[in-house]
Image (cartoon, rainbow, N blue to C red; front, side):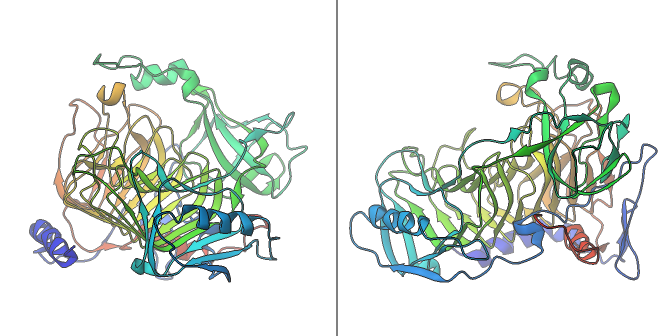
Length: 508
């Protein structure tokens, strides 16, 4: 793969927008002071662009460690799956050390043939290769995941802990609110900030009247109860302070909000996949009876994927399920997917979880390269990622993702935040509190939902378009095709500012 050629294509596409030297400028929404602090524009309801700094492995307060090697493995022949799985199962029985790790399994350079799926279901395990010299091949037929990291159980509400949020409106960006009762709550508690779905909200969004198409399903209120995972950092009188910002306002007119304590006993943590080349066998460029996801995570928190390369899979390099939290995916590439170029394929780096970070990634020939799915509760961040030969768009894909930052994303395709209408049986409004910061695209559409928040395009280099459906409110655009935006990365500056704050509480 000639990466210099593809980056050259991107430079040619972007050249018309970069050719005129312009002075430095700052967004009216977020300004950087001389001491690198950040000042946020507050609207009449108190909303701001939220702080996205708390995403990723341990909130990026530490880098994934280099975990000691428990066992080395060398490629054996036509079927290496059993050998690798046996080592993982053996390591699963080793006690966790003081850092929460059992050890790493090192796959030495070579070609490993995997007819099924390698599974990790225990905390503290790292699967490591020696870079591109360690090749895992999904052999034979069958759509499947090559590496699957999945915990147990489900998130469970702690009985008797639910209390009403007292404030009639809790704005986007806020980290505190008043509650009806604080007895039984304490600093460090894991809580859900709960916003119910209501028929009025769906009606005001006009998602109960999506233009009818083949298989179109109107939105139903019971499908839109949102559960944001947070942790209490302080309690002051009747005010609860939390570790992550509100990314969709709590509105009394739409049912207000509640909080409750929860547990997730089967969720695993401290798992790493690193330095591997993952490939799938295939018959033709449109073959779909072969490896589908290179790596899949769910029911996992505080984990990572780094320096992996996938080739020839039908769906993704990395796919994070809805119960994945605080995962960092970095320095990875999704290359040469093999499938039909239609819906449900080629989601190169897909995120359905919350508080996750994708950074320094690259994709080619994907459809939705950096993407969220339905009802995704933020914050989440895609930072410093590239897409070439894009076959569809980047952005929130469907049915209301909340709180995503797309920061320094470069693509030769589209970035869209819009009402997708009856596409895909009723995608509708793709998301809210979606922020494009210093991105580059051939073209972009940023629309504003009728109610419940804003979407932003700040410093985008590319052609501004209306979007699929006309008559929708326009998003908040600023500095289109204007060079010199400061800070150049909102995420990095928010992370820098966060590290100046007080130490985090235990357990975050």
